[in-house]
Every structure is written in C-alpha cells, then in structure tokens.
Image (cartoon, rainbow, N blue to C red):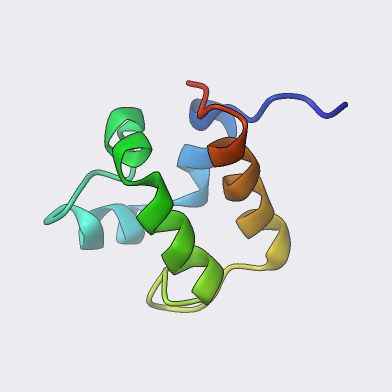
Length: 75
C-alpha cells in the first residue's frame, strides 16, 4: 500500500507562485481548505490539461492530485 499523500509535502508544491497568483480571484491554491473545497473542479481542470494555463502537467503529477482527492485530502 502506498503512503498517504500530504497537502503540505506533496500537493502544495505542485502549484508554483504563478499558479497561486493566477487563481487568487477564485481561491488560494496554497490554502488546504480552499483546495479541498474546490478539489473536484481543480482536478477536472488539471486532468483536461486546461490548468495550469502555461501547459499540462505530466501524468504523474495529475495522479498525485487524484490520489490526494480520492484518499481523503490529508493536510
């Protein structure tokens, strides 16, 4: 069984300052509660390649976010 995914250690670092600043009008990608509340929409955008706006994430990063949302969104 794989280790649980942590927001602070693994998810927050996926979003750089450019991502965080671009999305502040809607939510804060560096705030675990904001990301939890918007996790489905964020995951959908990341899976589709529409987010981040400067280029789609590689599959391993998408899968990490998917695991975090699926496994309970730990701090």
